[in-house]
Length: 485
Ligand code: GLU
Image 1: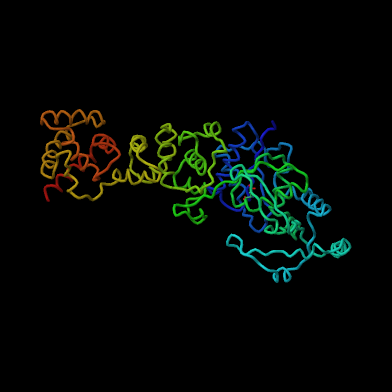
Image 2: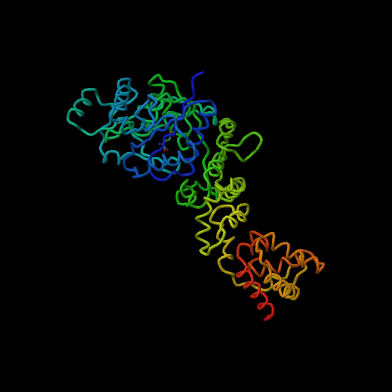
């Protein structure tokens, strides 16, 4: 069996969106699942769409996500160059385009803008498409040569007959047959000499020995034209795997405008790389046992492209947040702390033991920016409603809380050891003397020291972080509030 070779072939046109990341990941997994090679090819022939810095984003993202390529512009594997503009310099596209012209599978077209503008158009998939009328196909060899000698601008078009059908195979969609009359004579070489994506992908995938092509299903409708090119050259067609559309929650195509769709945006929003990769793997693929949490190595082991679904995948930020929280819970504490620290420092300017606070929030947040709302009360006691002292299950109300707070104030004033354990023992002693439940005492204290209904830790842990002076001041404030009510 030949070794599987896949390629991620991004166009450097901006950020790396979730859809791009999924293509890269699936290409990587298809290769690695079978011990194959994963290659990076930069498709920069569309000069108008080129965005400065986009190539760096691609390298950065692949490295960070662990989708390490075996070959690429920075790692020669004998199939270079790996950047299409550099491949063009070698004359490869023109050479193969001319070969097609020789074979009658392509032809020179000298039609100018005005003539093209006068041609009929058709609406295909919502877009207005010009149908070229094969005008230049009838030029004689002499006429073509004369035009070329004069330096007349030209493009080279694929020659697709008006009769018959073309069939190609996709691993997920099966055999697809289209009427040739529906296929346009697409441009292979543009007037600037650059190949179109449509031509370059075929020449490159063949000459770079690619066995499996994994890409978005927006390329499905052009695939018959690619297959005709392979056939015209007498080349073996690669295995095609076209991936389902990714939509947003409203089942609309995921757009660049919905801010959460690029990898770097997601990192900025506080998601961790492993969770993003894990989540993206499930955008169209699911394992047999419906397990959801996978490391990259586990994905390599379990990924079977035959289980990719044809139905659109919904990018669900709520689900991604859940998955992220699972990764945070499982994360080594020191790694977590390093990532959480900037968020803690932004929320808390006073001299707190941030490690203790990090340990409190680790299992409670979904993404790092959630930290602020969980810890803000440490920085400053919020205004709160004394109704919070009333808790049915704890059997507390304003009057019982006032009594408890007044009782524990002298105990906490006398207490020297403000560790969680020390405070707990002192308060439990009071609980025992009083013969009540823990919550009856702890609830009012926690309310007084936090001013919040929900806190990431209990009363004594909070007081340990706040320290004696601040804890006492908050308890006194609670007493005053309750007394004035
Ligand atoms: N350059 C194309 C893109 O970025 C590649 C498509 C393909 O994988 O063939 O969409």
